[in-house]
Length: 64
Ligand SMILES: [Zn+2]
Image 1 (cartoon, rainbow, N blue to C red):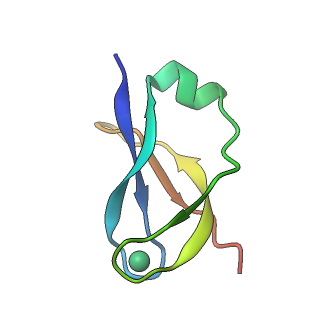
Image 2: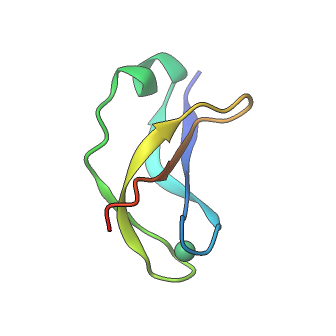
């Protein structure tokens, strides 16, 4: 079952939906190279995957 991958902004903590729609197995096999921009504070970063119980989620990779 495909789910929307959520990203969590490291700067402001807001979660937002990425354009990605994948299932968990696909996400686990993926290498995330896209840069996402937070719609709240405009912070741009690459994101890394994080384990989460209920949702597929990626978190700010903290490239700075
Ligand atoms: Zn933000």
